[in-house]
Image (cartoon, rainbow, N blue to C red; front, side, top):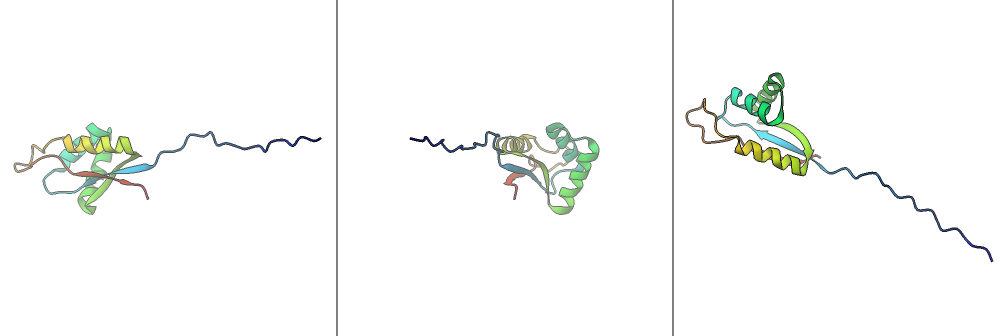
Length: 105
């Protein structure tokens, strides 16, 4: 009587990578470059040069990706942008800038 060995099943124990999401900042005419640069510095830790580059992109293209991260972190950053407040340099500014999140394609 021969005993057959059970087949070896390899399992992948590596952690699964979470889906990635972009935090997208949308352009408007109610916020100055100074506001955008300062907001990006405070909320994302970007230096002034990087903030200026992103402010220029959002102004020229209508939108800019600020960050690519996990869903929970992207939602948090979007909410921080929405809560940042109005641009004090623009008299008729009604509030914060608009941001969305989108899955990375």
